[in-house]
Length: 337
Ligand code: 5GP
Ligand code: MN
Image 1: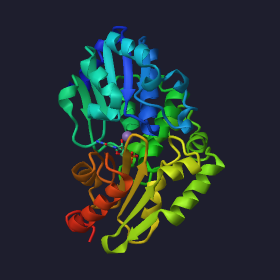
Image 2: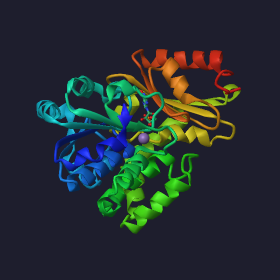
Image 3: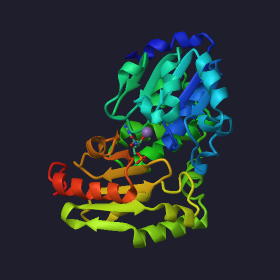
Image 4: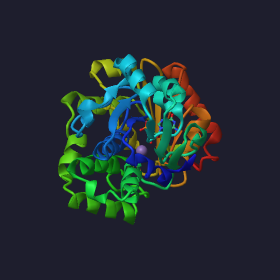
């Protein structure tokens, strides 16, 4: 994978460009993709953003979201666009598996592949150019750096600012995680000067749910939370029946994993959701507990040091049993005791 600055010159030639990201895009994935979309359109390109799957309704307000293709419902059209693309930008993921059913399509495509990502252990052999930096708070910060490095500061308008800010607050927990350094705050100041309405972005993402989601959280915290004080850990498990009873949609479970971390002494929190296709895990930790390695070793996943995801094809009961066994056997290795 060659350094990303080598493409700036090449981008002066108008081209057909696809931007894609990981399945079930979050604010950072969608925000970085759409910010880059607005930049590249202004640069004179023909650009399409393709998401491997659907996304949470709380992302629909983003400027340009209405033009994003959901691969799962536009397969033929999306495949034709990808086949035809001269450039394919892959944002906020670093191994093609995370693009789910889109992975083989991107893999086969002949367009030049560019990676912009901040997750651990990138599969750089899949990309021609790019930047992978785990020290970065978010892919949105990296797209911002890309815009500045390309000398396009002037093109940061309110639309780009809203999109970039969404990912910035999403991945830094609204500026509370360690990655929210001075550069991140300077970037926020620049976005504000460029027309950002930060209160509106917060409200769109965090204060725009239906009543059922709040009732669901109440139910889950009362009935589906187990705390393992001996391992400074906690687990939330969500059954299919819970999802049905409260009419839970994509995005409604986002952030739930953080609640147990508010308990004094808890260093790792996990949630497993019994989705149709798989049991989806999320892990969050504080301090020196490496959940990237935890997810990678035991739950077919990965991510960041303090935030990771994974999956299991076993039943909900069995994967919960596995979690408890792993906790018991490996707690000290992961600095949980
Ligand atoms: P979440 O728990 O919100 O799904 O994911 C937490 C973080 O880990 C996010 O940055 C997400 O992109 C990443 N992540 C989630 N699942 C996986 C996975 O299976 N593999 C890798 N490498 N990263 C993941
Ligand atoms: Mn991210």
